[in-house]
Length: 263
Image 1 (spheres, rainbow, N blue to C red):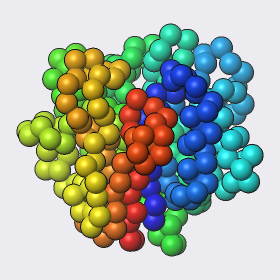
Image 2 (cartoon, one colour):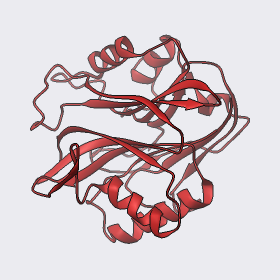
Image 3 (spheres, rainbow, N blue to C red):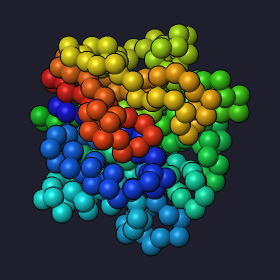
Image 4 (cartoon, rainbow, N blue to C red):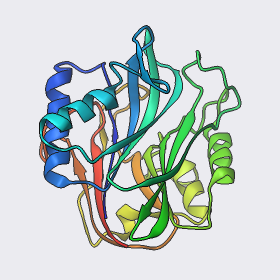
């Protein structure tokens, strides 16, 4: 099973359509089973295509690019989180080639006002893979030391919602560095989750953020905050950073993470 997670920083990038084409071509080449995307935005005043998905939804535009490449087997689950940049509804998405049995969008913050950018939601898609159920959660969480919307509250809300009756993966931008002890990363592992990067037989640095980006305005370090966590100790063949300028050109202010797992 091939997985990809990426914080898209959508519609805030220079040469945005060129970067969407790069992402689409990579998906065509790699043929990921499941893709978790964060900061998947759409204009507030655009027309609705179906459900809450509007015409210029980043993930919908990405699917259109894939169709032009002859790739038509991905299904989209998208959920609204909050108003991000002015005029944009920001959400999360999961794309998968496998049958979606069930999906859900749920809030994990104390506040649930979607007009406020600190309000956080999670998107879950449960798929059938080799005749078994597997759930995937696309996550974009807050910061550990945020007094207004502390990440620990968000993690507790998320952990309470997890269906542990079958394997699941948490994928996304956790805004908690794996290098910092006794914060969000360690808290997740202490609750029985496994980092696929740690389990990987073949891996690189794992770094997904370098220098200052949105949300890390004072950052001077290399960060590993984009993660793929598993509920079970799976066999991980590889974990590699992608869209970092070395392994495919950058498409966002975050790099992506691709993982290959033997289920």
